[in-house]
Length: 369
Image (cartoon, rainbow, N blue to C red; front, side, top):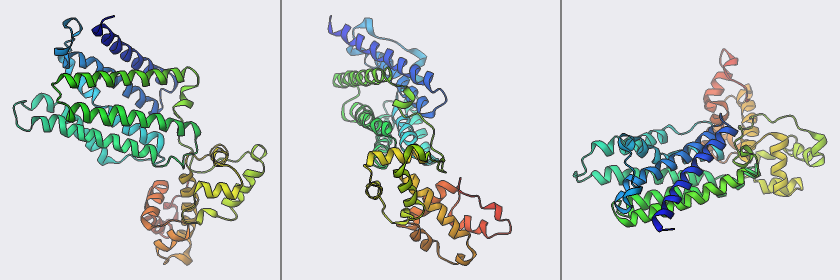
C-alpha cells in the first residue's frame, strides 16, 4: 500500500473511531455532562481531521483533497473547541465545585471569536493577522489545557473513586499531548503553511487514533459509565451507612468523625485518617465513598467543618466571635479557604449566613444539605 493510501486510511479510521466513541458514550449516559463533553471532543477531533484535507491540500494527492466550501468556518470552530471542552470535562470529572469560573467561559468565547469570524474577517496581509488569529488563540488553548492538567492532578490523592483515579492518567496523556502540545506545535512553533506542519498533523492524528481505539477497547470490557466515571456528584449529606457490611472499620471511622471530631485538625490527610482507622488508604477511600457517600476526601472535611461552623455562627453566645476564629476552630488554615468552602456548600458567605441566622427571619439561613 502506498504512503498516500496509508495516510488516507489513518484519517478515515480516526474519524470512524471518533464517531463510534461519541455514539457509545451518548448511548450509555445521554444526560451526563461528562459523556456529552467526551462526545463533543471526539467529534471536534473528527472535524479537525476532515478540515485537514483542505488546509493541507498542497501536500496531498489531488484525489484526496476535500473542498469543504461554506462548512470551513464551522469545521474550524469545531476543531478548535477541544482545549476548552477538555477544560470543562476535567472540571466536571475531577472537582467537586459546583460553579465553573465565568471568566474562563468568557476567555473561551474570546478564543472562538478569534477563530471565527476573526479568521475570515481579518485580512491576511495585516501585520498582526497571525498574532490575532493564530498565536493568541493558541495561547488561550494552552491556558485551557494547563487548567485541565491542574484539575486532573490537584486532588488526585484525595479522590475516593478508584476508577476515576485511573481515568486521570489517561486524561493527562490526552491533555498534555493532544491539546497542549498540538495547539502550540501546529499553530505557534511550526509555520502553519509548511510541510513540517502537515507532518505534525499526521503524527497527532495517529495519536488520536491510538487513544480513541484504546478507549473503545476498554469500553467493550466495562460499562462506560463506570470506566469514565460518568456518575452524579455524591450528596453533601452522608448516606445512611450499612454497618453490617462495613463492620468495625466503619464504626471506628464514625467515631473518629463524630465523637473525636478529627476533622477539626488542621492539615488532616487521608493517610493520617487511614492510620488512625487501621486501614490501608485504598480501603479507607472505598469505605468513605461507598458507605458515607463522598467522592472526595476534601468534600468530607468541608462538609463536617461547615456544619460545625454553622452551629457556631448561629450560637447567640458566639455572635461577636470573629469569623477567623471560627474558621480556625473547625480546622481551616485561613479565612479565605473557609470562605470558599462555606460558600461552595451554603451558597453564601459566612458573614451573610450569620446575619440571616440572627435576623428577624431565622429561616433565611438555610441548613447544610
